[in-house]
Length: 407
Image (cartoon, rainbow, N blue to C red):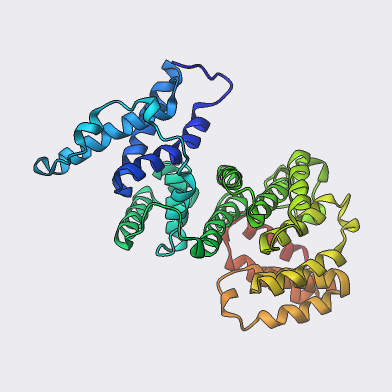
């Protein structure tokens, strides 16, 4: 047995999980059966390794255990349908026979297959690539474990029914498939940074997992500018996490945050990524958002923020990746440069956009800009409406308090 005292077993297992699953699926197919077998192997390892020590070749150890679990599953399913591979499966995995290549990227593309809904893509990515248990994923998204188990099971069935092959997509399809992968990781980070419902504002485990997986993806695709852009955006955003709430758990808006609490190392890494990447490859939305985040993070104070440059970047972003959320954020930048009335005029163009009907953010921004303009009554009403529209308890409290202060 090996000894890795400086490395938590949980971290090692999460790194190895997609590698072992990728090797197993490439060898045997049947994604759903392989994924179940790997989860069982991870459970055994989590129970034994802390007490017995980490094996000399932990990847081979996990592959051996997962192989044996597959045999058990095949036999229990139907004794008369034993596969010819069963004898081979019973043999311990020779470290020399473990594939050298890493199938994690192919696995990530499979989990983000276009046939799956975004929630299913998220759940399957966290389970198969992130190595999280069904209970952990259910807890992160505030749903019962049985509900999440059903969602993951349906996702596996959809993958199987789609006939998807376990391999990297054809070259012509890769840009679009990579876009889906990045979007899934982006959604994962956002749900962790500002949870959509429940008592907590943020989930550090989800943001950390999103950063870890995006960092891993950058290692696999070092030349992709948008992968670097997304990683930079996550780091520059996560750097402010410690300052987002006060001692009582109340939300602290960006302008009022104690910037000495921001994570300098994350900011430096994020800025370096933006500096190295922006302008050297195709400039996509994640690079532009990262550049905006970098301007915020590098400003010594809220008053010294270069809003004119931020507005210019939002104007480019709206051309590259138009959408209501970009317009919403651009309205704030317009208000900071040209005044709140100009921002409110731009915000008004979103009133009939049905994509904003189920979010509180339009009313929250409207309330902020109305307050800036001196319209106390209008701001109070908008804050109250926004508070009613969000399922996040911290955001409800924050918005209700803003309204109360204007009474």
